[in-house]
Image (cartoon, rainbow, N blue to C red; front, top):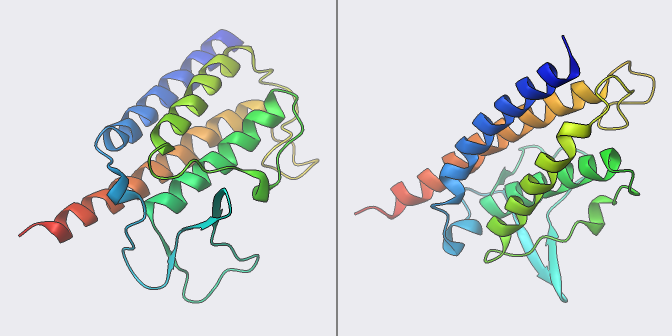
Length: 172
């Protein structure tokens, strides 16, 4: 299969996945973003001039339910770092990912989408993948692009379910 064919397939998968996420982003209101669906809940917290996510290096028990804010930060983290790697930039540390807050999150994710769409056509699909796989894994940039589609689909489902739960909980 040629690179153009593989990139076309990855792009069509991405467009489908983005369409599912976009459905919810288009309906997202700032009040949805920090709504806590359960306790314990992972969310975003104001800190100085920015926002900080809840985080633990070991998975808590029980696992906290993330809110929309945390899910969107998570998308920005993994996707931004993936773009850093594929664009030849120094990858940001998790702590350096600047979440824009409830009012700016949709535009932030749209900017990541625009950057991804510009990087994907020139991605060296057969090169070893610098992220998210361990060095020497045998995974390629094509595997990373397919992972972006899968990870984004998972996050779209999470965000959509949270948005729908909040809407249903507010219904009379």
